[in-house]
Amino acid sequence: MGSFSIWHWLIVLVVVLLLFGRGKIPELMGDVAKGIKSFKKGMSDDEPADTTKTVDHKADEIK
Image (cartoon, rainbow, N blue to C red; front, side):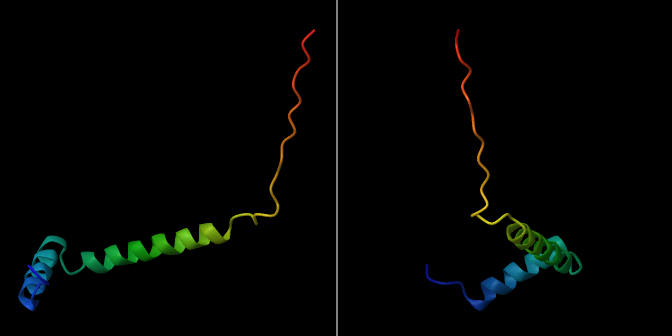
C-alpha cells in the first residue's frame, strides 16, 4: 500500500473544502486554539502541590 500520493491528498483537500467551506476551517482552527489556551491557563492556575490540605477525622466513641 505505501504512502499516499499528491493526488490522494488533493482529493482529500477538495472533499474537506466542500464539506466545511472556506470560512468554516479558520473558524474551527480558532476554536481549537482557544481551547488549548484555556487548557493551559487552567493548568497554570492550579494550586502548587506542596500546599496540600489535610482533614483530620475523629471516630465517634461507642458507649
